[in-house]
Image 1 (cartoon, helix red, strand yellow):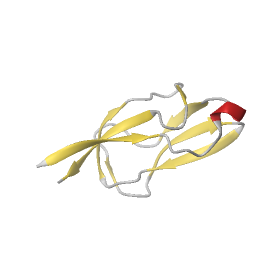
Image 2: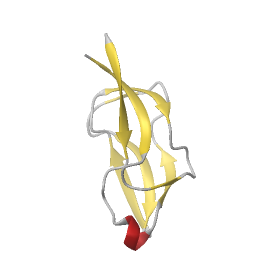
Image 3: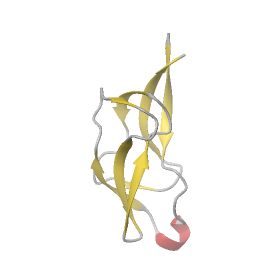
Image 4: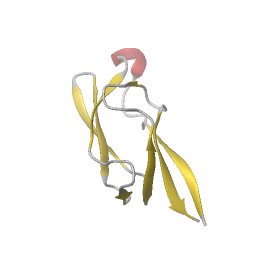
Length: 84
């Protein structure tokens, strides 16, 4: 049995001060197995390159925020299927 969890943009910058970020690159694709700590994607925010690690082990079933999308902390990035 498995369940789906949503991975959100972590609160790594102040969107009121620096504005939204942009998904610059996805390092993992839909269907990829990920382990906690694996870098999922790169976000450019406030002229800084931010690596977003996976907070859980699982399989990426859906990428919600595609490359070039504007994102803020708390926005959904991807859905991950994890064993229960």
